[in-house]
Figure 1 (cartoon, rainbow, N blue to C red):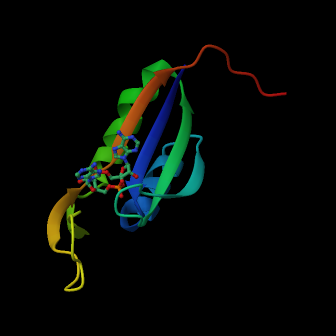
Figure 2 (figure 1 turned 60 degrees about the vertical axis):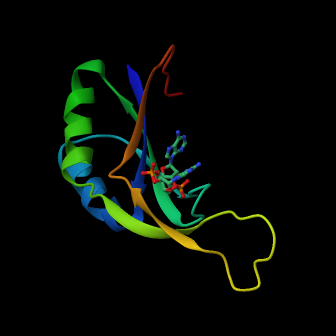
Length: 106
Ligand code: 2BA
């Protein structure tokens, strides 16, 4: 078994979750916040059999889009005129797949 941790843009979350549900995946959905932009995003925890990991990743990939957002650029000194902004590309999804040593439901 693997644990898939998927950080998903809030705008893609409904589509990703409903597709995963349709295909019978189990997951826990958490409201999370990006450390850099401090915008809300969605993190899914998915305990998944090894032979279904590729299917789960494909569903996430197919429903996640790249977007751009403005991010403040850190500067030294006077910021009275406001921080300069720069564009960053967000996503699609950020996904970690890790091995699960033990899995039990009690
Ligand atoms: P945020 O931390 O709010 O990051 C939003 C976007 O800002 C990132 O998009 C990336 O384009 C940019 N960014 C983040 N940290 C940066 C930095 N130190 N310098 C320059 N640009 C930076 P994504 O990479 O697609 O990440 C989307 C969200 O996924 C992140 O939101 C964060 O919540 C999560 N994430 C991404 N990489 C992660 C990692 N290695 N570990 C944990 N969470 C991660």
